[in-house]
Amino acid sequence: MIWDVENETMDRGQLQQLQLARLQQTLKNVYQNVPFYREKFDQLGIKPEDCRTLKDLSRFPFTVKTDLRDNYPFKMFAVPRSKVVRVHASSGTTGKPTVVGYTKKDLDTWADLVARLVTMVGVTEEDVAQVCFGYGLFTGAFGLHYGLERVGAMVVPTSTGNTERQIMLMQDFGTTTVISTPTYAMHMAETARKMGVDPAELPLKVGLFGSEAWTESMRAELERVWNLKATDNYGLSEIIGPGVSGECMYTNGLHVNEDHFLVEIIDPETEEPLDYGQGGELVITSLTKEAFPIIRYRTRDITVLNPEKCECGRTTVRMRKVSGRTDDMLIISGVNVFPSQIESVLLDVDGIAPHYKIIVAKKGYLDTLEVQVEPTEKAFTGQYKDLQLLEETVRNKLSSVLSLSAKVKLVEPGSLERFVGKAKRVVDNR
Ligand code: DLL
Image (cartoon, rainbow, N blue to C red; front, side, top):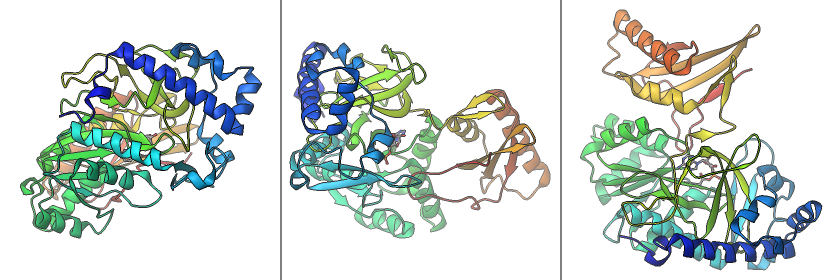
């Protein structure tokens, strides 16, 4: 099923015309109503009218996260405060959060975009959808909530935490759809087992997982333990929240809601635009937002775009599953390492549980990498020899994939921290 046939299957030429008209309108709007953009455009000597084709967008300035902080809390809004009916914020680790706003129309658009995503994975009014994202300033829960209601699903807003109750409600309510971070889904499965409930026996059919990077190996593991179809959806609060893109049942790239968001890929170093098929940093411009329009936002997320029509019939460009963020990349003794590479290795080793911690430190002039992992209960035989063999297997696989030697430390099952939202697995002590 396709929620919005007209917009999701539009001929690409026609779509680009629509995008250009909306882009021109957006540029005019921010120039008139957001002093931050007016100043930036003036500094570059560029006017909204200079955008005559979609390619011209590359002449306009980027927006970065610190711009939002510098304009805290509401100075990037393009409408009077009285027209803003909701705010959300993303929790920065330090300092002030970044605040985003929505008009009534923005909320209506948002629900519709999320309705497209949930429809893509087959959620209908027949479904019971449990939202295990944190309700609050985070966009994840409210975003999914209203989109699910719009398709008529029965929404169970459990939020995060109280994990045993999550499992009980899944059983009692017959939850068919679970919405969470992949990390929390893994933790919920573990809790279910501890309660004597086999997660694979629950009536779940589909999981909409997102809000953090996760590998194909993690997908396979989630599908195995929960016996469901695990799908990915992507978004960020600066752009709208969830609803930017999501996978259909073919799970072959995330369909971008391109009639509302214009996506580009740039080389993060040179900042030059790259072509379809080339990997780089995703940059997004909003095309219809009223309260908080945003121009060329540098997401820091790494992906590749594919404009080919999908088997599902949608014509929207697909972004490859995000492999990580440019600022996630660790440089260890001169070697670039993405946490996702480590995750793939770990999950592909039999006997290793999907919980891990990466610790980077400095010893003298040298960088060191330690990976702490838990063996599965089954692999935790208590036999020193078995554990040693497991440790060695992980170490060898890591060193061949990363071209770097890592210390592997097996820790007791259940001893690493568990997360209910986005995981924080990397500790850099340098
Ligand atoms: O995480 C919005 C969201 C909520 C998306 C629920 C999907 C589901 P922020 O907290 O602002 O917003 O974090 C945005 O999270 O730039 C990515 O680095 C990362 N991210 C979000 N979804 C994915 C995903 C929400 N599916 C930041 N895959 C983004 C990889 C993701 N990374």
